[in-house]
Image 1 (cartoon, one colour):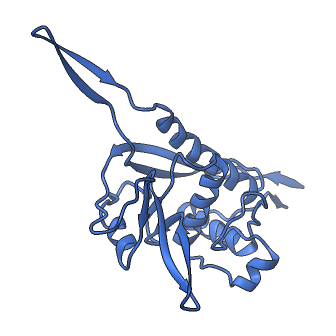
Image 2 (tube, one colour; image 1 turned 180 degrees about the vertical axis):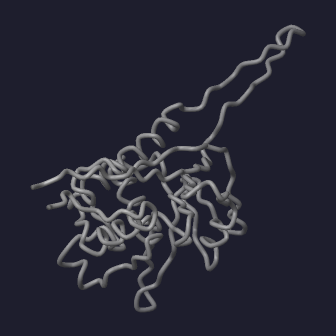
Length: 233
């Protein structure tokens, strides 16, 4: 006889720090009469954050938990914040020239409280690092996201990427929080694994066995329930 299993829900509480512009108040003096004009920021930013978390949960449930709706990201707060890039060069295009220690210093600028499982900072700026090949050719390596591998994730280029690409970057960084490392370059040449350094949006990445096991172990750690579709008796 087969019995369907009712899986416990795993709710991951998320706090989001948002560096994008907030509402602004402009004061106009018209013939001695001061009037206030409120410039509303793009409300699509708030919706984009909610959609990002909802879509990421849907992908995890579909790819990792066989379609069972067990994982949910609960948005606890969104808070305006600013990042101090120190002496880093910021181009007019919004690209930041990275330097040694910059990424770690950015992660140190926001924190999670005990009730939050995941702290997410979103920045509209792009981050790149110069690299020289053979002492001659100058190339640039872009950083899409970074994590402290504990509770913090910083995403760059927010609102300037497709929804799917932003979601894949988030799932990649969550993989690091689940103690996963990058596969070798050789492995990534044959399979577009979600944990590869470069994720191709045109070639949907594979959620490999290690990624699935990491999520299943995390689920068991939080719920004390092993994941499976059925129990037999």
